[in-house]
Length: 275
Ligand code: ADP
Ligand code: MG
Image 1 (cartoon, rainbow, N blue to C red):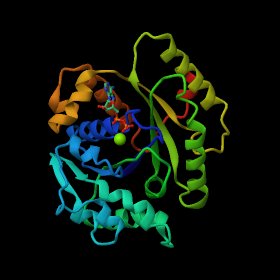
Image 2 (tube, rainbow, N blue to C red):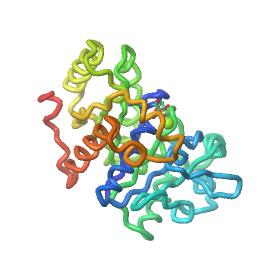
Image 3 (cartoon, rainbow, N blue to C red):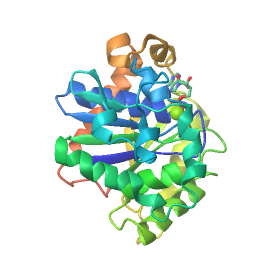
């Protein structure tokens, strides 16, 4: 089982689009996948047509200790289960403040889930912050993927994000590693996109070899800007079902192939040097 957190404290960089379409693409390849929505906006569930009304259990109930993940998950499409979120989840940050084990609620819930069903992948879509929900995701997983939008300030937030992973690794989860960085909303052929790619490669090369991101791979797949990716959520479908011939499908299918290729613990460490 691989557990992957899709995180970046910036909003609008492609976290949800990547979580959903990566999860859906893996499911299409026959992997059993559970997508956990950790953003109170609930967009990951909505993107797959899973709506939460007042009576539907959500991930909030898991953090509140009222439900298990197994009770909350819903089958969205073949092989793909979703643990949805809604605005209630915004209260979790406050409600957990004084809880002694507040950082490991999700890890415990995931351990219990694995007793009931074995998934090939658990993917977590994070909110745009580094608060207790994101820390729970980092504590419960082994891998971190970072979607980045290549623009001038893209690398600015990266060191803060890396610091958080390093802190969680030190205190709570020794197995944690940043394994992938995906360039999203990519404008092909622009000077800026190429510059950011070079900067990022240099940044990774220059990083401390003991850091949790030392083996981060800059995915070769570039997720180009494609209007179909922005339209798909309102139809409650992944890009693969909504627009199977779009460049969005081509790009996310490439990403899925790279992710599957890294199975069996053979996550490439040479890609930084080769890029
Ligand atoms: P985040 O979860 O990081 O806030 P989203 O995945 O929700 O970011 O993306 C932000 C907005 O950009 C959404 O409206 C989404 O549909 C759109 N979007 C994401 N990736 C692409 C892309 N490659 N091409 C076009 N629109 C995109
Ligand atoms: Mg999002």
